[in-house]
Image 1 (spheres, rainbow over the protein chains, first blue to last red):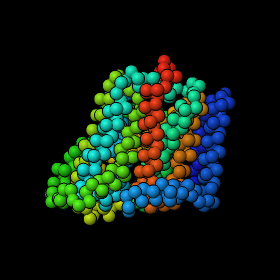
Image 2: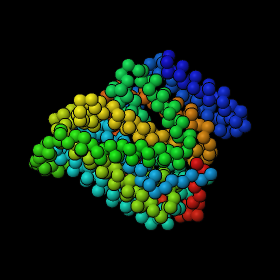
Image 3: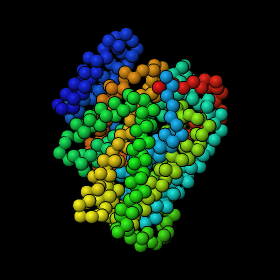
Image 4: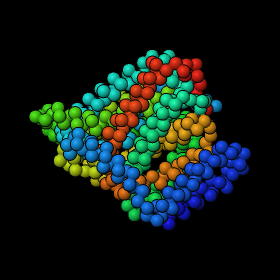
Length: 73
Length: 365
């Protein structure tokens, strides 16, 4: 649970400091909130050991294998 | 306020960008494939890249109109595609290099510290540097790149008692050309990261010295990488260098000047780490700027959540071996595809696109 704890703490400090400015601009606030929700979502997935490495595994098994075939390693 | 960087700063950023990530892992694979001829790979790859950069940075009056591409005004679909590819290119390098940096610190320097803690400390430093803007990033890069360059130029003297020139022989060999082509294929995408200059050209002043600055930056990168490759072969030998995970770290561990100066390797690593942070800070700055351009909003607020989000990407790799496999095998193909798209896009905007003419205002940095 270390990862979500660090993420939430840093983001909470960020919002405490910048909330007044963010309240003024709706488009900016939505963008920041979007990134925040993704960050918290990923950190929760990390805490529950969801295999996030699937994407890189797919890349390693497709483009990586292509390179291996080119250089014959 | 418009931010500008000088020719020297631009050259140092380019040199640092291609040198600092390349030296960590990739020499091992290059030496494994090309053996004692690996130093020729560096020269041949750089000759290709010199040609590309020389062609791309010619006719500065035409390039000026490309500045409009990085403006957050209404954009055509092909401009958005180009910017998205550029964003993906920067993201891929950032994710790879952050993992390389964290993996190195975790494996060599702080093996008992959780990698998440290392990742977040790195990302907080990066966010802080990126928030200050391109001018500060450029100044920090100049200081650290010049320091590490001086150390690398001095390395042959520090390792004089360990150098065996016989390890460079025989030059050539039966499979020389096939090994050379394979190694250039691997090395190309690492050095072609120099296409980042397309993003940086909106900041350079005086603009008409773009080509000179790009060539100067490439030459700095070539000199330091060539020295390191030659030393890897002549000091460690092909057998050791092709087996070591971090051959350049193994190289600087061979410095043995006196009995009391036997841990110079740590000092050199401490000088290298900030150069890597400079590269990552530039990438984080670039990613945030490109996101701003794509969504049509110029602001610095999103950099902290964005940094935290990117800090979590170290979980995209199952372990250090997966990240090494990504650097060795996935990046050469993925990088080459992205870099070729960017180069073609740049040529399109330079020679064929009339729409951005006259819209050459810089983005507000």
